[in-house]
Length: 334
Image 1 (cartoon, helix red, strand yellow):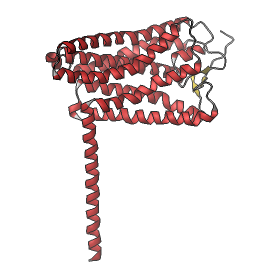
Image 2 (cartoon, helix red, strand yellow):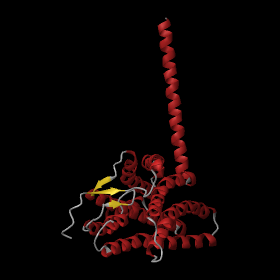
Image 3 (cartoon, helix red, strand yellow):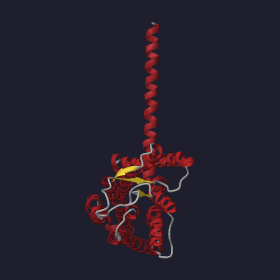
Image 4 (cartoon, one colour):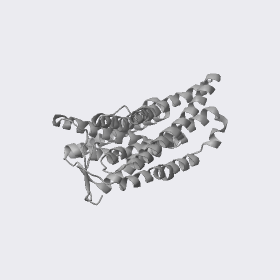
């Protein structure tokens, strides 16, 4: 250990083995992915904040999920784009460790928020008469705050501290677009079993416990709807389909990657792993708001009203400007 010098910077490789001819295309795609995520998630947050009739428990959870996705992309994508646009592939070790914490923090937060979303739908469908007393804006705000402040931070703090105690060796290169625990630990030159075990346990807690509660909730929801075929329940289940799409986008690829990682006879190449990381990290953040706009009636109607109001205001301003110009021209002619 004493023969290793202190490492101050590490290099983010990005997509390993990517030919130089594709750097511009890939970085442009990541740039547009960030713009789409920023615009779509920002719109969802703005609609919920500035429209009083959307300040309901379900939409508060959706706004929190949009905020988490937007912050995740802001923490990771600008640096990933800079690797290819400006050659800024190095990152200080302390900043890398901070990014590791934030990446897993927001990833965990998404899982807990999806769990809250499933609980909200369970109460709305299985206990509709008690919904307003059980699920309130205050309780949802406290629950979301607990997920932001306590759950996500406490689960990921230990794994980040253990990673910070590892000694890096070799060329200090991380085969990833951003600093994640798995890629960072792979660059260490010491026993990393304890750090990997803690990270794996954390991942299973973050994935399996919320996913188990989500599955239990929707099994009961489907059972209630199958027995009671009322129009209100069918409308409520329509929103559940939206949630199920978002849940599938989050959990399916992650479970696939973690299952592959624990199989002793399967070794995933670093370039394939990085592509999968990109797909399951960023694609859901672009797709989720679009799913809300297309399948959530209240959000779709609110967005339509905002756009129509903006169009009307713009047309009225142009009309007033035209009238003023006409008056000014007549005055000049007189």
